[in-house]
Length: 276
Image 1 (tube, rainbow, N blue to C red):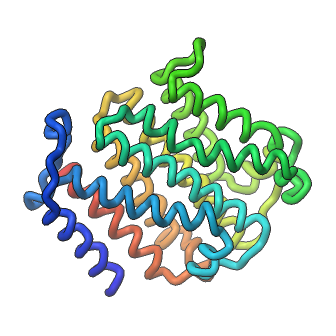
Image 2: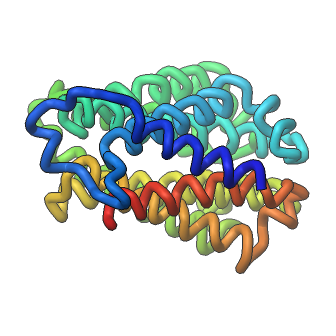
């Protein structure tokens, strides 16, 4: 299958790239077949950023590429799934290059701050999507607050505490959204209709769960950036397996399952390289 071949080819290419990692990163490497896990994680982060960038900047086009029916809600969920994934991918890429994971995530959150303020100013959440007043104010407030905390700009919440807050916030919202999508949306004063909107809502929820896994593995379990990324990719793989083979939400949405399988191969291969 061409997607599988592309995934394996990418991993092979990353192994052939010669880099000179910093000494502190030498301890972070995995070892599946002699493949440098740090290089693979960096390459996958770049791939994730590219995909997330398209979803963030051109959500309608992203939906068209994947065959998702376009509605206001699917566009919203595509954009915010992309913004969330972009923040995670940039954080890992910068942290593997020497920054702390918290600082990397802080810079990764900047686009989310801009988008949430834009949504607030344009009254998107209430005026366009019909959600509650809380949905109008909370995204901008939360994103700006967390970004400042991650970058060490708050006197009452340092970067380490912010990472823990993110774990709780993302984890609770993500699990609620994934396991009880309709109730989750009702809690924000909104609703979803049909398999496309439900599936995209679950996609956004899955990015939040993976984000909680990334920050939680680092802040609560003391895992390295590489290991934390591996945990997050494992979460993505689990939700991808569910959407492809258990709940089959990908098929219900009318999306080509091969496109979902491509990302599953990337996720499982990344986990294997990091933890083998």
